[in-house]
Length: 223
Image (tube, rainbow, N blue to C red):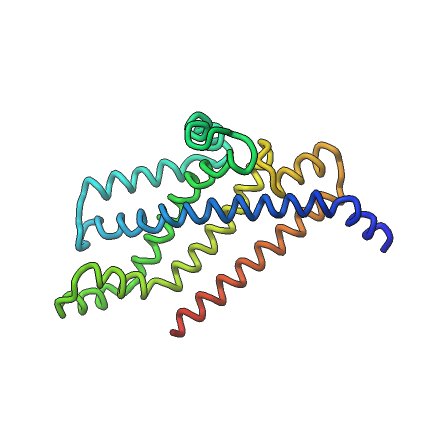
């Protein structure tokens, strides 16, 4: 018991700061990734062959773009776009310096999950509303997005968990957060207790997010 109290006394401030930095990275990156990813996913669904806004060029262009970004592991992408990150935010270190690569990495992932969710909507429902003369924008908002809400929430849950993993990798290059804590203290300084604490916190965080996402999606499915 004394050893546990001693650990919290010595490390509570450092761990607390790392948790806050992780939440900052995840929260800000997820916000911008959703702003980009959901419209992008909607676009590749609506412009694919046989859809209402069919456009072969746009579909193939954005489909290829998403595939290219998703083919690059995050740690490589992080270094590859350093000049772009520097241009956008003026730095490549700390929480601020990792937001751009996190968004570039996560937004296409959300777009692909969004595409999958929208394609699960029964085409017959869309055709029925179209036959009734409902405008396309109303069908998109009130049918496609509404019917796909549970799948969208589950997709965003998966993306958020993936984003947490990416922030942990970003910690290895000085971005801060729990990944940085585990690397600097747990690995480089052989503070095993810090490593265990970091893993425990990440497990609790991921389990909580997954549980919240599952419950929210289940609730939307019943509505």
